[in-house]
Length: 230
Image (cartoon, rainbow, N blue to C red; front, side, top):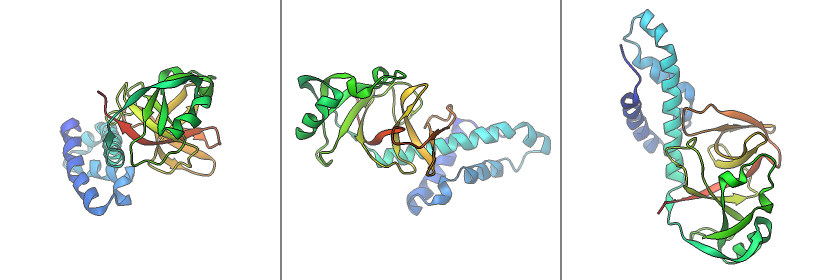
């Protein structure tokens, strides 16, 4: 009986990934239905009883394969940058420091866990560390956040630092920092969106996607860079 283990997923992603490179991320390869079809095709040699018993494995296989493909696209769009930190020249809140940091081509650095408390105002958080902007990025309004949790692995691990551009309009496949009333701020991938809703997905297939209302306060900003840990 065929089992959809890590080796099977890796081999499928190697083959599909090569096609994605050639087709420039053709939409067909971004469809979970397409991945489900591939899983079904791999199960064609099973008996009907085996296929029935293995239905859950096939669904999980498709989810994991889709998550890995999404992770590869994110890695291509957001290559790791060198992290350069400096002490903040002033004692200030996030709201007070952002304009000065922008003038000096920097972003204030915060711990996502500290900023993630439900009901906490991010702009009132104190900040004593800044991050220098990569030279190819424009001087816009940014915050840098140190990530917590494993929901965005393998691209983002605990203690990784991301750079978030504020006041952006999210698009499908963007990594964003979103605010959820029960969790505070979280880093997620935009899986789909409408004028009223946004579906937020993790890169770790162990986590289910969530749908949130699309309001001005839902999305803090878009992740435009990730930094290599020292």
